[in-house]
Image 1 (spheres, each protein chain N blue to C red):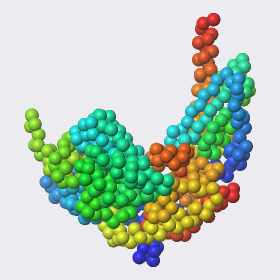
Image 2: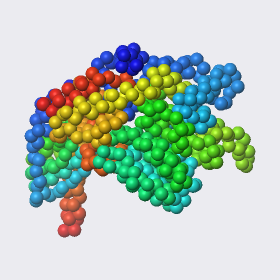
Image 3: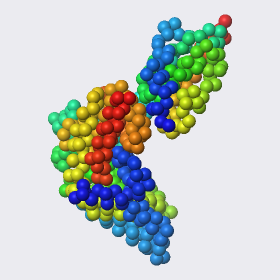
Image 4: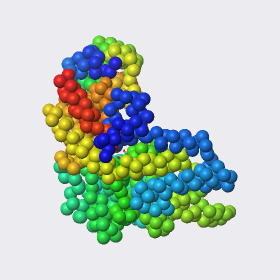
Length: 133
Length: 399
Ligand SMILES: Cc1ncc(COP(=O)(O)O)c(C=O)c1O
């Protein structure tokens, strides 16, 4: 079935969750898919290794926006280490998609990759600072 | 007349039999192929498969003869001579090849292109420009995606090379190639035309057009994949050095020194895609049978209908001229990403392209930062299919 008729996807696309800027974010990372112009920026607020709050901004196709929205729901409140383990297949399962062509996997991969980078950026910042004290 | 014969024409294309619901509107990316072309490729591999221009046994003679006959067939179709046609892989390779052929002539020179170009007519020139310390100038287009001729005259003046697309794969504009070529020649520039989108749709006469080089792809005009043409003016081809070297392109190689083969073989090093080349000859025969003039006039009708039907849809914006366009339309719909449009149409068995169609600067020029959805038609499409497309797009807007 085409993703167009999966209610979960259309719901997330039309009513995205956590679509917000977090001013006091611990880490912010933005990335884009040059082949289609999709952009995503993810904000995370970390407290004791947990993603206490998360927000995203971006624009793109229904798949990329719905998967970003769902991803923020999935990781909110979880440990960073667990969030790092989430893959494109996990997101597809949650969205209710069985198959996706190689060109469209990229639409889902964008938010997964961006979240990972936001976390890694945070961790390296903390490690650097930690090393000095 | 194509319109009356459309059922019989469509039955020549196995894909429509295999997939009766298919509404194929991505012919600018690659066309479908008729049975005679597919059969011809099978015939080469199953009846006289052997390398060309090498063996002296009868099968090798046969394949060489078929290969060279195909070159003649294509030359006739294009209004050129067979020894002016170099077989390449596709338009991209043709444009890279000509850019490297001209590299020695470009030192501190000026290469002029236009805002309409496909990446394959931008990037090879950027590369040789950086190697030759040449300047690249880009001719502007107006709001309708038509060449701004005042800007053209300014930029072409003092150019060493002018390279431009004959028909834009995004805007659907047809450029006045003859006028541009003669203006550039008056400036002493070498002229290169990207004919990837023109050769499938227009009746060409390359000698009459007068461009020094003309690039095209077989797969966009019913031929097999992996076969293209670079047409070159004979005198220039004889004069220029081959950028790529190896077997078949030489007559004599000694411990020191070598003799280049004659034009065009000088520019065809290594084993060519002979099955593809022979299949391509068959494709031009098929196009001749339908008639390029008929194709041109029927497609005008399709282009007009496409425009009329789609612009009725609320929130639809398009790139290119409002009149006289090729049978293709690149558009966006407010509130829908181009990928979503294509994915939805796919559920209705309508195949269109979404993205930048390898022409990102042009999309940016028109503020289409997410790319566009593009319906591109060929003579095997009909008016009912355009209606289905419009109907499905209206369905999407209501969703
Ligand atoms: C105007 C234009 N130039 C060049 C090309 C490149 O053709 P190919 O991919 O066959 O090399 C295309 C095809 O998309 C085109 O539309």
